[in-house]
Length: 244
Image: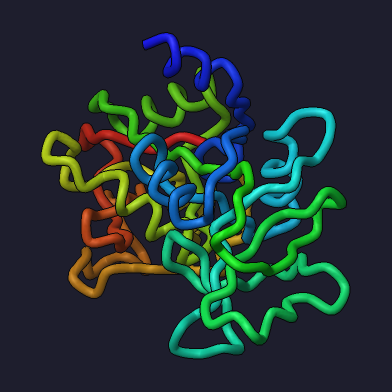
């Protein structure tokens, strides 16, 4: 018990675009860090944008701390990198000349003290960054969920990439979580948009959803299914939801 309390005291957290980044000052190999994050939070941290990157490094406190993140080279394509959560890396924050570890069959990535990424062998021991995503296990209408998130967090979450969608999907697989969970998608003035003003570029609509999605009369609020796809539902439905 004392060890657990001590570790929790040492970890620091920062709100991200989705979920919270946590810096864990325990030195482990990359695979052990991945297991730790998946057991205690959601996964190793990721960055799909500069704002993600800024929030990630802020989790370590005043000074950027060298540590593992969820970067790993795709074993099926040596020219591609993926996040531990499942999505491909689209945002580039590699240091000069990186990644360059061509002699390692399975190189992984970490943040250096200057905030840029580097790739090295996964057997080295480093502290690491985790991402924590949680569904609010209270059933509310979409509007009430939005108000709850604004009062207690920031907003209903946006899902801006494949990686964010996959991580959110993983967190709603528990049996007691509702079949759909509210996210920050809303239809007004002839368009769908994210309520926190993020651009609606990446989309993952279900083909089995409502047929009136392009011009819905009642089903004007967006939800994430347990299959990891989006559907439009009646805003008065009472569901669990994800804040950021």
